[in-house]
Length: 476
Image (cartoon, rainbow, N blue to C red; front, side, top):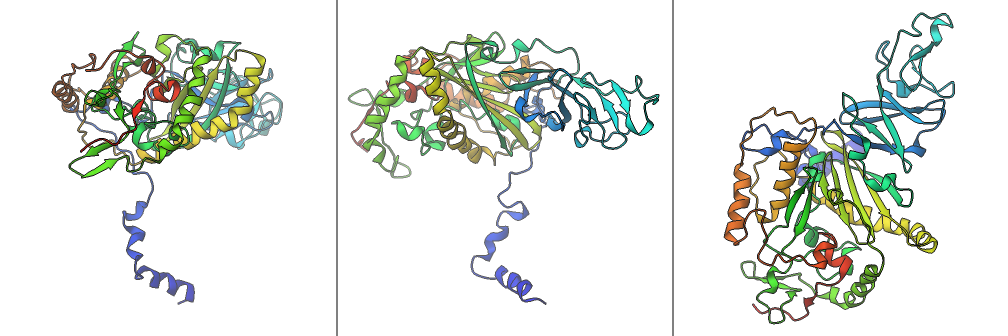
């Protein structure tokens, strides 16, 4: 037995060696995704591989070159992308109709065509076989062999692809309107999360995770409440044109009702744990300045968008106004346990100088918002086990509405399970609302719409700086 092998065996019995398989062989990997199949669980209707009857962002157009095709998996389906003779990015199913080989492993020997790596079947952007290299110029496969083509459209440097079976829906129905606006500036970045697309989607507009999950992100560290103050009441929302769920008002001031100055305390005492949260008050050392700096955004023109293009909407889009720009997170199913995430930063610069400023600041914004901030969401949700029964609260009201919108109004939903009109988990939300004297989907106790809420749930305090907090330590 070699020395190295002996040391490995010895390591297993060393103090702390038990940690190696403490969580089994999966280690710290994301748990496997298991689709519920329960009439008492609305999640059973949400397809594990996503809603296919929609347009999806595929990849940056610059990622597709002339000489080599690109393979991509979306909604569990493999596609190949290449440039046609006119330079447009086109897509085919990533399977040669001759013997099924991956076309993405082939080449674009002739400009505008993709050739299969196995026998050289060569296809144009419409999927027509124009040559069959191994059979020579007289091949009878030409004109008879055809690959399945997939509609594509390139907007603002992003290639969009139709994943449905039938005639494509108008792309304007599925893609944010600023991508058709010549005056708008749209920047994008792609990310991968090793979890299911619905787990990713349901994270945004979680009415209380921002305060906890993002409390130490660069962005949220500049605000008093790390984005959202604590509240036992979930955001009230409404469905707009059966296309999106949009926050109408929140319950940000719930804990202000019992304070002498009518403001939400910075720290609160948790009597059953016998401690305060936040545990420390160091944030107060700088937020007096950073909140004033962030409030300067209100002097800029607000980014306007149709009402149905704020909030959450199929096939996996989340939109939050950050006053002078729009934050978009678009989750794209790849596999059961893998999601491609595209972020959009959309703005309408007020001047050439403003445009230059946004271009210069883009790398910093991209890191702070799309990586430092948003990756904290993934770190928090990656272990969500979707097949487990849920015990929901009033703060999950928005989540319930999103699931109803997707399962009742999304295109292509197949009702494989006869789910109850109101599930047990949804009844728990109603019970929690009633116990808080807040009618389901109705206004919360403090639900007078405020400029802070209107500036965009989740980033309201950050963007407006108008919701103050008491600096005094609360009494026990």
